[in-house]
Image 1 (cartoon, rainbow, N blue to C red):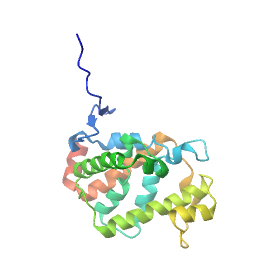
Image 2: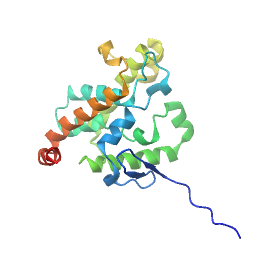
Image 3: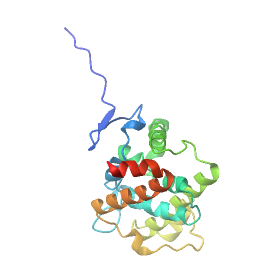
Image 4: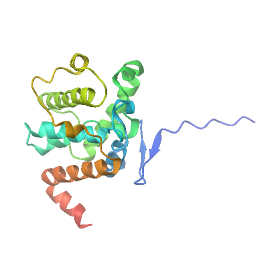
Length: 209
């Protein structure tokens, strides 16, 4: 007698106890602690960076948020910058060449997770073009300095892939990779600061529990 093959598992169990479906992610299963924990342990550049610790997506995200905050004071857009790579807490940080090989299926899963994260934290699922452009510019600027300071790229290589920094200078100390636990706590702290500005009543209720 043949046995019907069970469908493949498409969900991941989080440390919070949430079970997140990758194909149909619910905002109710998204928790900031899970995002911070995951991103602090996902290495940028496939781990090919100098230093004792991996340079994490969480540390990169903190830099991007700080860059956006220099020009955008609205907490919505600062939070969007902090969470711009949030789907990677589930699917990891695939380097750009591999994303090109993977094609549309990867992007579809990434976009569904992006939508769930934004809905969970009260952000529009589609950002205004100017904000999306600002976040992308900050993302590429951080990538340039990561590439040249810790990932072994020459300046001309990094400029070709990520654009020249046009005179911008970021502190080299920002790119010294930090321990995962430390970065995860910093990520949650920055989220809570922005969440208090964006949703003061909800944030107060959460703190009182």
